[in-house]
Image 1 (tube, helix red, strand yellow):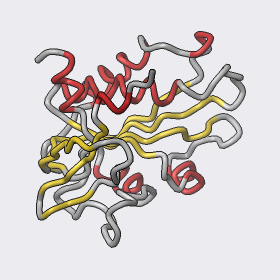
Image 2 (cartoon, helix red, strand yellow):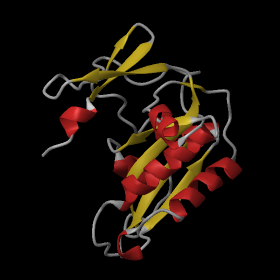
Image 3 (tube, one colour):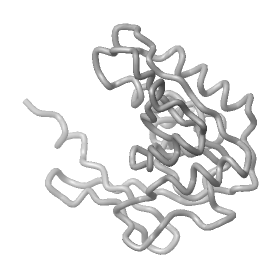
Image 4 (cartoon, one colour):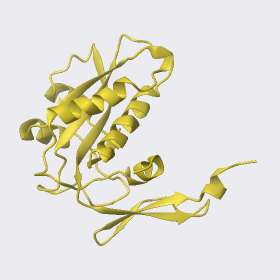
Length: 190
């Protein structure tokens, strides 16, 4: 698959085949992609927690806010939950020149997941104090930046082309998840 197809297949998946496991080795390979990604000032302020056990996954799942645009939906049901997570941590004592590293590295890992036949979703809406406690992290050393949920996608996602100014809220029609994206011609200015 070419790079454009890889990017197009990299959607925010929220329902998975939970029984399709992701190994520690696969998660390490995704973190390796993050390791080689750009880092502001090459400060490399991020660290990663890998989760692929049911017990730890359940704790992480309980700390996430799922799909705020889908009112009344509290996330995937048992059997459709992520098979793994990568929790991205920022070292408190490293003064990075910007806060771009978590997004850059998350995108690299998500593209790598798609390349391996998986998919995922990035979470910034996280109960960080509770997750910090669940993971046994030292809050004086680490701050949770993002959480990536991963698994074999179970849902069909369709990208709908829309003009600038149209409603960009994602939505579901039955089992199909729709993601409106502004047309290229409306994104380029000047």
